[in-house]
Image (cartoon, rainbow, N blue to C red; front, side, top):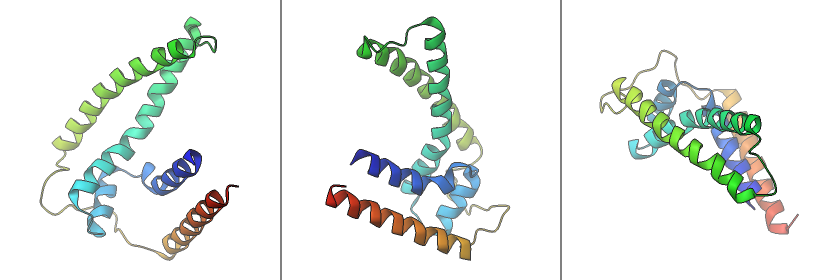
Length: 144
């Protein structure tokens, strides 16, 4: 159940992961998504690679110090979660301040250097994504 849900979310997020935040906001404006949805999703998708790098850094530091152990999983979890949460909080503040300084919450018209269009490739990939999502949900209901 959890794997299917995470897989669907990652499939939906993949097109936006490498996209610059300005282009992501332009896409959301083009599809008339409300700002209460577009801005948090843009921040979240921009923040995921940063959190991934923070996890990698924490794991490397714990490995070097010999603190990763399967004998004490709760202690290891604490050693991982606390530094990542502190770092993520600091970085999220910095990213939010940076985006705000660039005018991401400006109520005016947002423009993009590239033209944002829904091309044939996008239609095909969207159809494949919907088919994959439906098939995963059907397989989940059958218990496979």
